[in-house]
Image (cartoon, rainbow, N blue to C red; front, side, top):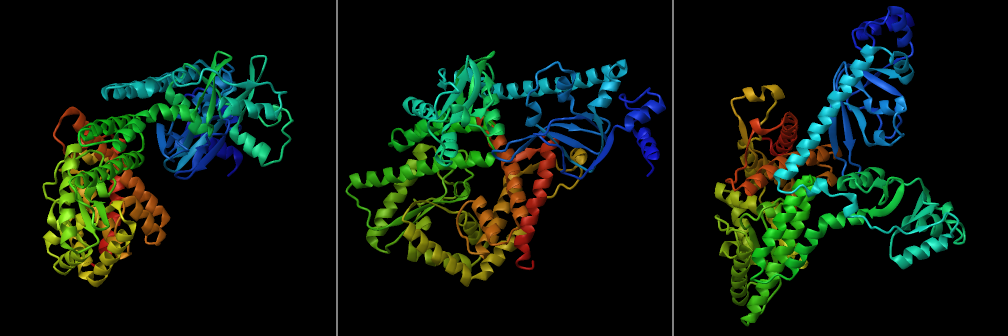
Length: 636
């Protein structure tokens, strides 16, 4: 296309925009000749987080998202959605105008196309030519004011949420509350050896390099290893030769999460702390984590030392940790991993305590055994102490073993109840004869379930195959899994019947647009019965087919990816879908627990944000694909 025609074509697209409105045609065309129209595909990065801005972008078509990406866990948080007719890059105007010091704010965010995008790049040279027009001033002021209002509204909502949870500590802790007040420093002319000795003597992992109260750099243990030991540098060389110049700093009055964000985004572990221009301390990643994990360590210590009388106190400690993790927006799968480790420690302690109690009565353990959790605990998804789900396998088929493990099963169940676990209404506990037994007994039990695949036996098996090893002999565990796998191999009809059940319980679909959700006949969905159970059972079927009997759902997803049953992309989509579902489920259940409301897994669409609905729709599509794969294996 001829350049003049090209400019005329784009002039028609932008001539009513405040940035060009009222400008004579020749002048507008002259300005447009300095601009550039750019096209981006869906999910393309429009503005990179670490690249200096050279102008503004005017969206002509499509949508884009301004987002922050957490390099630590890969999660993206959308700060703003920019639509056609809007400008991107307002945060760089202060630097363009010369009214603020150059800072790295832009490196914190990036802009991504959320659809096909056509945008006009307007260099600062053009902005400068239009800056004196009052209409442009008014437009810019209005847009900045609107976005500032949105930022304050968002911050206010975060503070409100933190307060509603009963504590705003997560947001309101200041850097000065966690920093070390005395930061060790050497002059740039000091030797590397002097810096290393200072770090050794003070038992610290970094030293600042300063001259005349001016911070020049920082030397860390990593610098000593990489730039001295590994590179063979001379220890008598000056400290300035290995220091990292112009280190990232933070104000002592900044908030806890300001420091944590800087550390995560910048990839550093040490932040010099300033008051005005003076260095007043240093804060490290260890300082930050210690503040937030103190509760965890105290609870671990309580678990390790627990006796029958102190078991009830542990629940309170774990619930405090759950509350803190949810309030701090820790990713749900990471939160469940942390809590599962605590509950596993508690179970191991209860087993040891139960054996000790039997020993005091003169009873001795006659052979090896293994203890397994089932249900939500077996899946690593039990964030609250609900009911018990466990079974016990022992090696020797003898009267002595049967008598001992009957007593042990009763003690374990009783001690778990003392710790806060309710007894299972379905009696799926090792205190019950049908949930404990020798290898021989379990072999016959599994054979019965599989040869006589009644609905009752299938339901028992579905819960059973969520099992996970908690304690006991690893050798016996290997034998138990081998005999279980052999039974499955001999009874393919069992897996066929499990797949038939799944076909009868299809995961629902919500394919309608978000705006029409409120017009749907149904207004809610049972997260547990309609989504989580079918997801778990479908994953269970595929895992059993390929030889993995136990473990958490995430472990099974990784296993199926390794076996090339799942492509890497689908495995990742599946984990993201599970994260979305579990976030909705856990958040609602925890709020019910805190407010004393009756526990329910039914979630109402009217209480969900538009973004949550959109994520739910996408997640259900992924889980339905998983279910379809499980059913398709049997040509149902």
